[in-house]
Length: 313
Ligand code: 0X9
Ligand code: ZN
Image: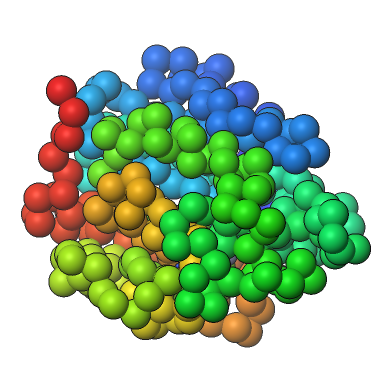
């Protein structure tokens, strides 16, 4: 655990060892989450951090896109921070919420980026009608799947939606797990890179969701807090379709519409394109500090707007 210093990007095997170390060291407040099994047979793991069962829940999906390494680096750093920080505000953030964190969802793709092709994005499940491999897992959720040109039907495209919604076992598994605990969840965050933007639903349509104003207020709080740090990192925000492009079948649309999680976002991390997906390791910790500052403000605003009430009894 001591040499996990976020000075480089860790492969899946080291991330798994890290999770095991955390579970062994903090058995009272952490537990293993078994999300399911990938196409190639790898375990998809998560960790729950709960100081008080029945807190409002925050779910973090990370590294659904294989090459976006900063996302799992941030998720693992955040786990450590929630467990070890002595800052009073971080302690409240940690102890007053139930955290469900999946550092690497697309495990097969992630291993492939470490071993074969650093720029791989998709899953690794072959497509019977094509020699191209994998689907875009962030187009594979069963929420307006393939509508409005928000995904491609071409198996060779980087945004190939898959043969059908939930064709990718990783995505079916994540959706099953989230559905099983959805009444415990108040916030869903999907970590991506890059562009420095917070994206609310919807990606499949330009029509804004009912609580658009609240979604933007929470995103604005995150953005303002990040910009106050010495790094002065700027995050913009908007709906996915409005601020970025049409994308159907993405995590945050599904979480919002199908799992009824009213604060669901995609967060595109550093940078804005200088290094893109290959963010230099020296930026890992500064970026993580940005994210923590953003989350503190995000959760404070969400609470103020009434989104952190426990939904189940
Ligand atoms: O295209 C994507 O899946 C995301 N961008 S990335 O560069 N990380 O691939 C953005 C998706 C945003 N849209 C929705 N969440 N609907
Ligand atoms: Zn992505």
